[in-house]
Image (cartoon, rainbow over the protein chains, first blue to last red):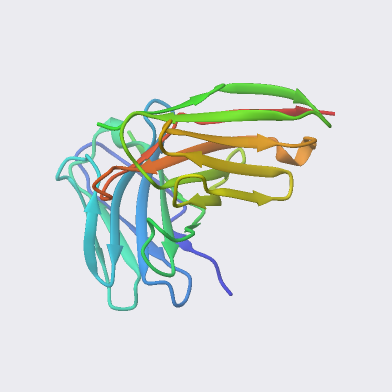
Length: 114
Length: 111
């Protein structure tokens, strides 16, 4: 069974631009969560989606948004990029609700903002 | 905001030795997770602990949860080099709608 895939794997943007990251969960998984990892702030929870609905959201500004499609694929969008948005963005899928179920992580998208 | 602290932050141990990583959190939570991350790689889910007293074991790793003490431990038995990685714990808030990670423990197992 294919694992979680994320595209693109690497991305370079400049301040003020916007970016969209994509995550395809494991087939049959209905839940997708997103995380940001930086050396300074560590791992932080961004959002959780289940059956196309955002169930939970971390403490990030409104510039960070996401959505989930009917095939469970998810996208994350960051508008008006700032230097501090440079990070590894990880998505994870789980069969059911992620907060009680094992999560499977994708390889991540490394975003660099110049 | 819920705080999650791990100690030690860095751990260097010899092969064959035992050691424990500690994860303390600041407010009530009855769900705790352990993850492993190899350098330059993504996260791998190790354990999901869903109740007080939960204990789970996989190979040389055993995780436990004490919700009253707000403490989880990850015990490593007879360490081998392949266990070298960074280990993270994470908890949900008591409302169940936020997810907080610890700072991570970087483990190096020396032959």
